[in-house]
Amino acid sequence: MLILHGFTGSVDSVRRLEAPIQALGIPTHMPALRGHGAPSPAALRGVTWHDWVDDAETALQALLMQAERAIVVGHSMGGLVALTLAAEHPQAVDSLVLAAPALQLASPLAPGRPLHGLTPLIRRLVKSWPIPHLYTNRALAEGDTNYPWAPIDAILSLFEFLQVTRRRLPEIRVPTLILQSHQDSVVVPDCAEAILQAIATPEPQKRIVWFERTQHQLFRDCELDATIGAVVDFVRGRLDQAGNPWATAIEGTPPGHSPLDITPSPA
Image 1 (spheres, helix red, strand yellow):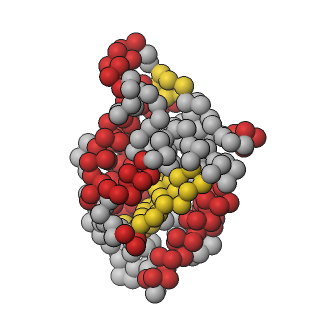
Image 2 (cartoon, one colour):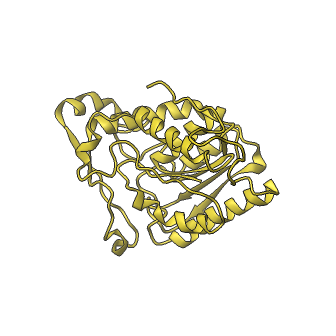
C-alpha cells in the first residue's frame, strides 16, 4: 500500500493507517512529498504538482520491489496524486482509497468558486496564505505537524492540479473507495459524488463511505477508528477477491529492478 498525505500535510496525518495495514501482511510506503516534512513551509516555494506526482511515482516503483501491485491511499491532495497514478499506471495500481479528495476546495479563491478570478491579483500582492488546523475534537489538534501556512505559488499549483485531475477522471477504471465527511470545511463534500460519477470504474466496484462528525483530517480527528476501519475492510475485500497473497515479493525480480516499467510523467 502506498499512503499519500495531503497539501501542507505531514506523514503524521496518515501514519495511523500504517500499523493496521501492515498487520494484514501488506508492505507499506508512506513518503513525504516534495516540499513537505521540512522545518518551514518555505520548503514549498518553487514546488509544483508535477513534483508531487514524480515523488509518488518513485515511491510506487520502490514499493513494487516488494509487491505485484499496490493499493494507493491518498488524503486530500494525495487523493489527486492517487487518481493520477491510477490513470498513468493502471497495470501497477490495484485500487484506490480517496480520503477527502481535494477535487473541489471550499476556499472562495479555488477554481469553480466565486473569487477564483482574483487569483492573479492575489499572486502579485500576497506571498503566503494561512492554512488552519481544523478539528471537530480540538484536543486532537495538539501535536499536529502539518504546515500552518503555504506559499501562494504552491497553492496556485494545487489549484491547477485539481483542474487537470478533473479532466482525467474518466480514465480511472480501478476499484475505488471514497471516504468523505459531511462536516469537511476544506473540500466541498459533494465532490465525492462528482468523482464517483465521473470515474469509469464499474458501479459495483466503487462507493462512498460518509462520516458525520469529523473535519478534514479523517485519519486524526474524532472518527479516526471508523475511517481506518473502513480502509482495513476495503483492503481485506481486495485480498479476498484476489484469492491469493498478491502483495508478496515477486520471485525472480533482480535487486534494484521494478517488475513493472514506470516512467515518471514529464513535468
